[in-house]
Length: 464
Image 1 (cartoon, helix red, strand yellow):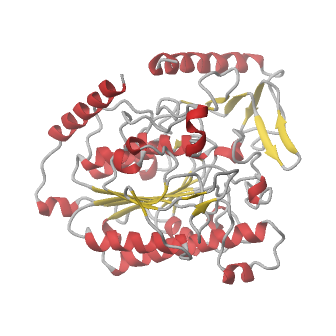
Image 2 (cartoon, one colour; image 1 turned 90 degrees about the vertical axis):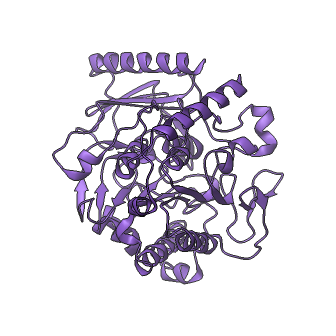
């Protein structure tokens, strides 16, 4: 069955490639480069431009000043792997075949969780059909077997780590064991002991920019910051020394990340590539309150929740796009947009044909161009943890009404479980303090029916 699916995927990609317009070298040079920056576990308001007053983030703020910043932008999931699968496929994580995080290799067989299915068509694969050189620098976390690793999912070049996090100096993943070294260049394990991973990533990106100046490139820059272990530079730890733990450790890592983003932006300027490069920035989901993160450090502001939760603080994330001369400068958009939307938006901006792919995301260019444009989404859905919505967390939102099934929230004191159905109205109560289910039973019934119809269709499509 898997061979048939893989063959069908190859046929579809060939059809897409065949229908693409063949461009000359001159035309290729006119196609915009694309850099998608995905930070890891960064809180909803943890940039100055989103309201943070205790952080130093001039480079991320520069992107906002030179582009469009979103205030109601949502991650596709509140955990790492499902969010990344949705970004790369333009589909909800369930339709992308990934209901939960990819485990360490030692546990994959036991849990029967191997990563994103290889028949899924990624952003890298579709851009390759349009003449793009594709590269991933940073975190993968979508599978460990060759066909589920970056080179098997459309990336011409890969430098980074397979798993969910690494120590930024030893490049080992220290978990419950067995601890493993996790740094690769394409399919080859490499050793760079003592070298700071954020610096290695910047060096790799500069090298790609230098080598690929005559052809368009797509770089997916998947930061492992400010995900634990918090390893900000000493100068930033000194800068934030008066902040309490764990905010100071988290803040130091955010500013370390921001500085590296600035180095790449400056290099685009230096090489004359900035004007022809789309830069997209987003966090993969809310901040972590795990023990390894010292129970916190990030800030969701007025939003309830964090990583693993489907309250706003777990899924409402900072997001920015900059493309000089095409995307307006220093603009804010309040319309609801989703992580899956980047797939269709990038396709539109690069002239890439995606007409033969059935995705959930929509191009948000109308929203980017006008603050009066409608959101492309009437109803939006989330679910992770299982295809079985009796045990999974799930969400359906229409307008300001939002219904969460099996709502949870992680705090240092332990996991808080809410009523099986939690209804909120984000206009009336953005902090989701009160469950309105008993007060508005008709809204519960309507939203539950929308969810039931959606999940039934997803399960049928995925054979669940």
